[in-house]
Every structure is written in structure tokens, then in C-alpha cells.
Length: 203
Image 1 (tube, rainbow, N blue to C red):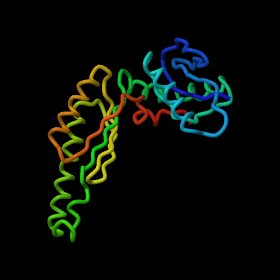
Image 2 (cartoon, one colour):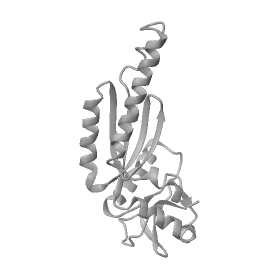
Image 3 (cartoon, rainbow, N blue to C red):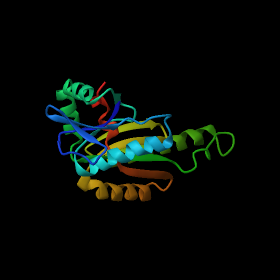
Image 4 (cartoon, one colour):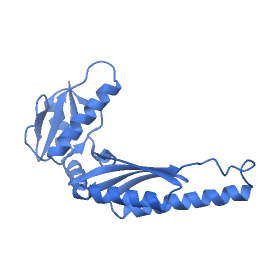
């Protein structure tokens, strides 16, 4: 059994024990499948491998646990979806994923009946929701694409950012944090662009 780590259009062989499996115009980057129970260590090992591949080539990352019988099965799975996977790879080419979370520093201070009236609570909630929207929109201007999960007063988002624009994006996050001192804004990455590649993963 082998595990599929990523898909690329770069046929260069990766460092062992990984292997590059030709799949028409694409290449499946595979390695021995993990054995035994899934642990935090095996998950991080998968992540480290994908990040290492990302440093040397454009990749469409594949989530942990995509296991195939052998290299021929990997070639069939990838070649059978050549057009879709190529389009997905083109979408993330030259870019990385940056994850952003934003939330109020003290989300419960305006609770009605304790710190103020119901009207105060609603007004504060609206202010925080407006701030989250401004944060989301400000960061989107510096990204190629975004996948956003908002829950009124909270933001969880992934931004697809050109590799050479990562430092600029980080500086923008710091400016946004200074402009909204009532929020905690956290940016992590760069990561492989999982949030923008899921539609392209082999079944």
C-alpha cells in the first residue's frame, strides 16, 4: 500500500522514500503508507512531507489518509481526472495558504443583565460583527482567493497568497490588528494550499 501526498506537474524525483509516479501530464508524489493507529506524530509527518515538496515545486496537496494499492492504482486515479486536477493545480500555482483567525478579546463583557442592557449588548454585537467584516474585506484585497467561515463575531479564513507576497500580507495583518485593538487577529502559515485544492483530490 502507498500513500498519495501531492500531485504536481514537475516530474523530478523527490527524496526517498518518496517516489514520483508518472500520470500523463501530471505526477503523483507517493510514499509508503503509514502503518498502525493514526497519531498526532503521523499527521505531522504527513504535513512535513507535503511542506517539503511545496518548497521545491508547485503541488496540489492531498490530505492525510489517501491510500492506494500500488503505483499503478495511483497512476489510474490521477490520469482519470487529468483535466480537473490540472485546473486545480493551476489555481494554486505559485501560491501558498495563510490562515487567519479573528475574534473579540473579551466577547462576554456586554452580556445583557450583567454589564448592560439588552440594547447595549445588541449594539456591541453589531460593532464586533462590522469589525470582523472589515478585517475579512481588508485581507481579501491582498489575496488571490479566499475561503471564509464567519460566525458573526468570529472569523476563520484561508487566503491564497502569492509566494512573493507573503511578507506583504503579514504586514497587512499587523496593520489590521493595530486598527482593531478590540480583536485578536492571528495569522499562521505559509501552509500547503489545502483549502483551495480539495475539489481536485482523487477519489
